[in-house]
Length: 266
Image (cartoon, rainbow, N blue to C red; front, side, top):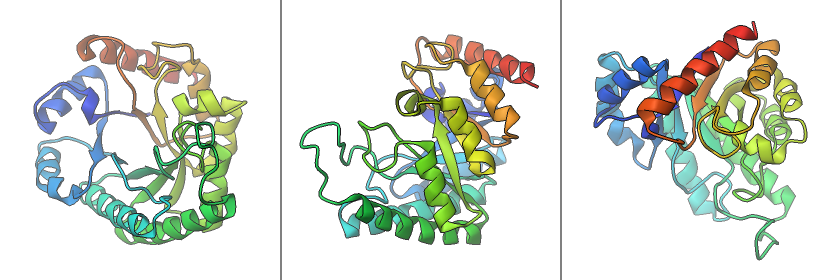
């Protein structure tokens, strides 16, 4: 079990301090945020890595995104993700996370009709993902494709959709990821969706039904972890959530519960 926590949830004024808290709280690593110009953080991340910190993954933080309606913005998004992939590989990480887009458009909110049809959406996503998969292979990293819920993105909402795109690109560097919060909204059978992804599933974001840390809502994480273990999952489990109380209290308690649940599913 590789259990990590996103950097913004961890107390501490530096990545070294955050790493110290993370290890004491029961985490194996930190998932960093990838902002524009991520390479500028390389010195900071490398220094923390030299001090012992482990950074398995980086999550894109802010647009533009690979599914943008504007070609120039898509170009910026692809270049940004190449930067994330290269930087995380330098410090021994596994890969970078991206959705198709975030906050670009929703068919469930006005004006309801996007300016591009589903065939156009798929074409631009395959173009960007194909280029990124090639780069990921070159730098020995992976790209994790994340479905979001229908209110945050109109293109990619379910694990099966991410799986179809990954299979179409057909690169070992392009993998499916899942997010338990989004799955709680979008998947008719969340456990079945996890099982269906098979070996393509390499990363899972963990948050409860109310977007707080695991254990603060009504998702059955014992069943979720059981489905992952049954499918041979050996990827990253990362906390991406809000916190229901002080980090010093809720993160160690939640991490302990997740580890107990994981062991019980063996």
